[in-house]
Image (cartoon, rainbow, N blue to C red; front, side):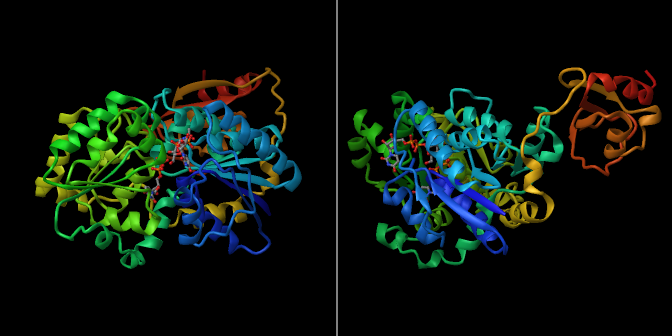
Length: 454
Ligand code: UD1
Ligand code: UDP
């Protein structure tokens, strides 16, 4: 199996590292690691290769910074050339960056199966470039690895064929679990003069919708000024540093004695900092997941999140950038012992640390990658259509795969009688009262009608 693994930014490198490792343990697998070059500073890219034991990339496309269009198109064009030369059986990416979308477009256009890890996240916020990227990449993918049941059900709601969606967990949990044993080597707390036991908050901000809007950055800065009872460590993403400087807020932050602005940290140092923190305030996706994994309260500096599991389980709150909302959420997590204790007892919604192994196993054992290559389907009716029905009569008790054999229709989603989505597989029986959505060739509808007694 020849696989091209694509990375481009800090979180992609971190989340792909364990997948690379798991795949490289499979004999007869040839891996080609391509860095798009979207992130290029040593502390945004190279440091993670050495810290996480990831091979140096076989190729760096050198795309660099630029606007959304230039970055995406640049990755598509350059990745396309690599795919043509290397002829992989499949191409893998993780996440929702411009690098991911460019890679998805290139491999799909070249009829090379694109495999999307961390698929199915939805913020429903199209002002975010990431929402555009992830939706497009998901739908271009021949195989989607969803990190949570919620992500899986989002894909099924959008009509994605269930057999092409696999629940894997998020590979970030694998990385955190692997690296936690080594964080004692980090000297970051000593270097910063932070003593364990003093109230500590880690802050990260880099989203376009925050960094590029002055009033939102001002809101965050105002909140930090008020929260002077807690030591704040804020590793500054290069985008954010530039913006804060242009808004005249960088010097103001530097003048706050309880706030430490630092360069982006390496992974060990960052994990050490998180694990010593009492609360985390962030707009980062990966940091939200790590907070839950380390059972740290998370104040989400956004108006929505594509990781609602955090809020639903009680790990954190979506507070936006209004100063008083930030201050009251941070104080709740700092001072309400019961809330903190509850968070420590919550299960991790992002998986059990075996996502990468599962992904490698599926690619190796379950799927003949060649079968993922696109083919033109033949629909006598021109294209498929969707139907919904309540299970009863002859449909009761038959399995999902029997249903497909009997009707030619494929089940897309199953809900309980109250309307909540249910997980299912080929051998799941349909139960009385369940609501099923299916799709098929309209020419097969007489077979469906017969089964349903319509
Ligand atoms: C990108 C991703 C975002 C992801 C984040 C991870 C998109 C649309 N955004 O955002 O989803 O969460 O990476 O960190 O793909 N810069 C440097 N050095 C670098 C990289 C960037 O100075 O090594 C500066 C440049 O001024 C650049 C700016 O940061 O213009 C933004 O970089 P870019 O890659 O466009 O987006 P991120 O904000 O990093
Ligand atoms: N991270 C890091 N050093 C830092 C800040 C973040 O190593 O100074 C790691 C963090 O642990 C997480 C990842 O970078 O795994 C998140 O990246 P980022 O916030 O840039 O992107 P997102 O996850 O939002 O796409």
